[in-house]
Image (cartoon, rainbow, N blue to C red; front, side, top):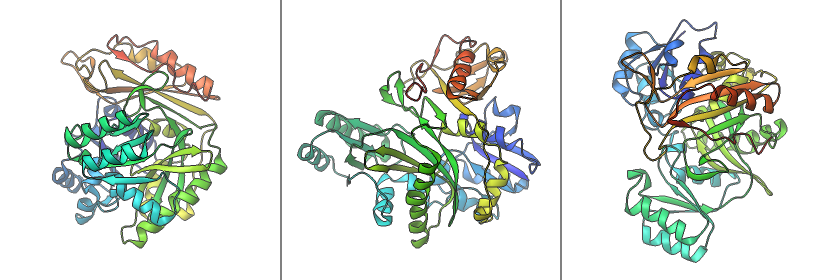
Length: 422
């Protein structure tokens, strides 16, 4: 099969790394890719949102399967455009991608399907939102209704914090059109986990779970980011509970989407809170998480391409997945100034020495090749350094040992990834 992956982050590097091992693969492309992806796939200088150009490339190169990594092209309709051209795209249609494109739409689906979730209200008027906060009190969670690259969520401990978040999103436009409407919901308490399922419109196949670390600083301090680290498996989330959440949260959502005439095919990512009352849905995303994807790909023993093809062929009910009996832990290396204003152009040394550490795999994200051939920072989240081992402690130690080999004074990471489980 000729396969085209869309995206340029650590998630896409991990997907390409896994796909490259498939005996079903003939040729692998990635648009636009990054220097790490270039080691396992042919990179194409087309942005993931340049939909007409991507369709033309897929036609010219006889692409059999397109796999979008990030959410933005899905929300913009890449699947619809590819299918009009007769090319299979593993992802939801534009209508089904509203599960991530609109927080309030996800809440409506959850309520209609009887999925446990936080109590919520949607507002498109900031005065009304602030009045609601003053009447309800804190803590509350304020979310931009649209896409905000994982940063449009404020867990407000005080009314003043919540009102500031509403003002920033709705009046000051910090997230553009995505924040012109907000969802305000009750603040759930408990461990947060990420659960992933391959979906074919009717059936769902569990592809694992991971614990993400969203805050930029140690001890879960500082602003939310796209994700600073992850690990899998999650001790708080045993296999029986994973499967129960697929049955009680993912499958009802698929049934409701099909009932509305917008069946969901692709990766459904359920962000869950494990409360004292049981697991509750925080949000749905319509793709793999980043950096959760990295740890899941390290643990996956089965052929990823075969699993995706089964989903595209509506054959998930006849497919199963096997996993390596090991733990994986990912630490994101970010550029100084992330998430507000990351420094670019700094040189990253020691990559070969870091990658040579036992049990280590490094995935590139925001990197570029300098004029002198050096690897340089070209984004906020720059590398994902992953460790694998028989235990989570071994995986943790491998990842941080590799980080110790990097020579990049302008980079930083959290030093407590996995600490809670350890």
